[in-house]
Amino acid sequence: MAKMHRLVLLKFKPGANGKFGPLAAALAALRQRLPGFLHFCGGPYSSPEGLNKSFTHGCLMTFADAAARDQYLTHPDHEKVKSEFLPFVEDVIAFDFAE
Image (cartoon, rainbow, N blue to C red; front, side, top):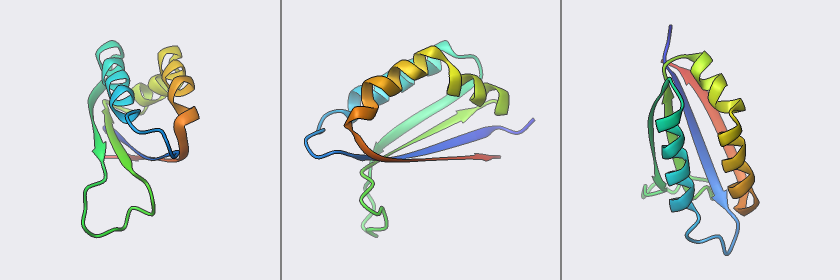
């Protein structure tokens, strides 16, 4: 089975400063509760290239396999995090790939 990586790019709405820290903490806490959720990291865009197309923050999650990723996607705690933070997000890209 191949590990699954999930790359999420976020563009926050104006005035949503300070929301990424609590969002990252909530996602990191999910990693502690969901079997197969192996790794989480995230932060603000920091490259001098300027290729972010206005996306301000990114997260990378690693799952043991597609089944663990699928469990995360539909888990009630993940839905709660989404409902709490998506109102502050103008745009999001989620891109999953296998290792």
